[in-house]
Length: 110
Picture 1: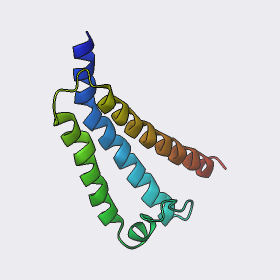
Picture 2: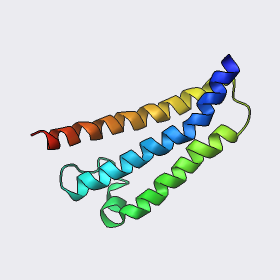
Picture 3: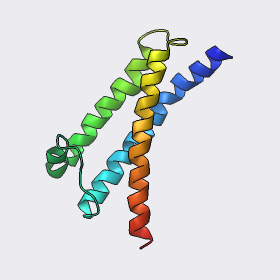
Picture 4: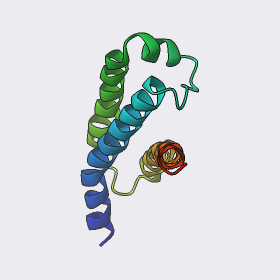
């Protein structure tokens, strides 16, 4: 049971990261272009202001590393360190995605 659960998780992890990553990029670009939000990350803000597609390429590279390479580094069925890091990544993306959903709801329902 434990092995099946971990195998299922590592199969779904790249998909979850890709969906959350795409949602983050799309909502951020739309929010900034419409003037509803601003980029909080000072390292990303100049890239996002000048070339949003460059940021998308960077995010896809990050996705490739986190979503595809990390799960293939070796057998992790019982390695809690990999699981903890991956859950923190998903949690961070979910927090940012929830923030985007919040500001969108404020814009739509004012």
